[in-house]
Amino acid sequence: MARFNNRRLAALEIAGSALALAGCSGPAGYAALDRDAEPSDALPEELPAYALEDVDEGSARHIGTDEGTDLWLLRAEHGSEVCVLAYPDAVDWVMGCGGEGAVTVDGPAGSFAVQPDGATPPTDATRISDNVFRL
Image 1 (spheres, helix red, strand yellow):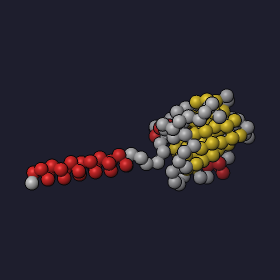
Image 2: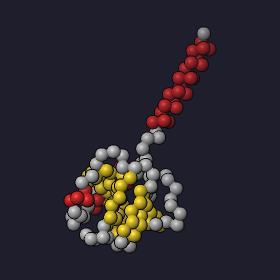
Image 3: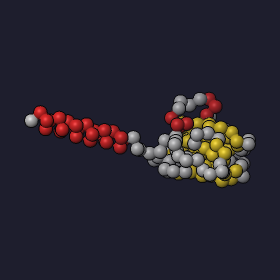
Image 4: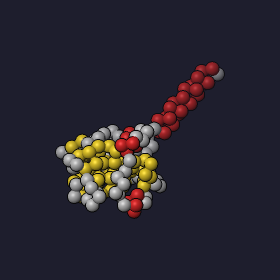
């Protein structure tokens, strides 16, 4: 009888471990969005209000500058989408949002791709941060 209980306990431990690991495979992560906000994360004041209608402004994180274009990551206001803002100036800015996987934006300032933590970087891309690449 003790042998049966040990097997049963082992089976429960294996099942518990599998459930715990399954919980780790949730939506894609973006480390930059998980850090505390800093003053440098503030979005440009010149950005029109309509640009921010569907995003969580408080989630904005400045992740770098590439050839004069400032780049921010933001979370969408609802859902699990991530957004990237490429802002060279008040006229030529562009923002794009998307769900799991890569998000790309293309505008006068260039083309950029955002990928979740641990994803394979795009081929022939220049790394701006762990998640953002110039295409």
